[in-house]
Image 1: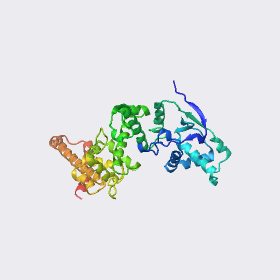
Image 2: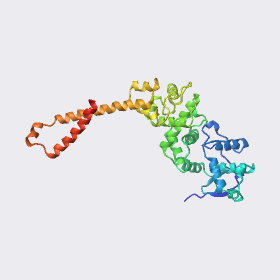
Image 3: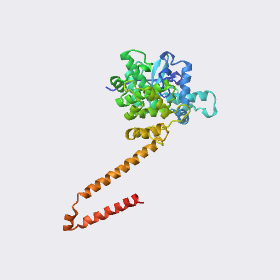
Image 4: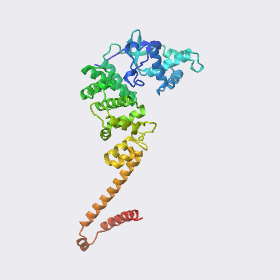
Length: 374
């Protein structure tokens, strides 16, 4: 049977923004406890974070100001004392709160018509109060982990890591906010994947990437969204993981590996990073992975010690491989020609078709001859 949820109409003033919204909550130490979710300071902080973040709140507000609020997509809530916490729909509710704040302050460009105000006097919401936590996780997973409104790589990884730690502590005990307790367990991973209805491999890569981020932060390295994608690329490539001394169970680098990753991908002591992008550009981690796989110590040290761009070393190796490929082709041609008994063929003569093929081959050899003996 399809699940039917209760729908209620709630005023904007009675809707609380979520201070723990994964869009900007990226560390367990930033989590606001349940009893303090509706505190004025926490609500202001959540509002400010939504406005300051790259969530297009003002653009959405401008659209609502002109057209009114269209309740096309549902707002999901749960009751907190006498008010309701927004589980899903924080961006839209922030835009409405922003409009009302500007309107009440008398700001000229934000004076709303009666029709616009009437469009969101009461918001139709889906009330998940008392619903099973797994159902709430499923809704969030369907909407934000690769579906309707996908979270960015870092916030989605944080969200999954947070849930993983809850499940791990539920089984083993301890403190879910202590990331040093993290160990990778495929059974826990699969529980989280089932909760959010997403692939097990996606959960695995994201929670392991987030654990590495915490190690780097613990060592004083500043890792933002862009640098986090470098960690994600590392987790996906076994040769790169191996190079930095990655431990599959604890999901951290060795101490030396951590320092080396910071030097190459983050930049230390005022020096810029040598590798500047995860998968493309003049010096990418993906190219570095190719160098590790196909190069030698000379190639690797050219990047690490001399600071050469990984794309240049990648091209050097590729060029060498191409030359070797040409040499092997010449060897094969030489061997095949050596197998032909030309004397026996000359007795019967050559067909017109054979002559035409020879002419084409001769043209190719002429091009090769010019390239080699230029």
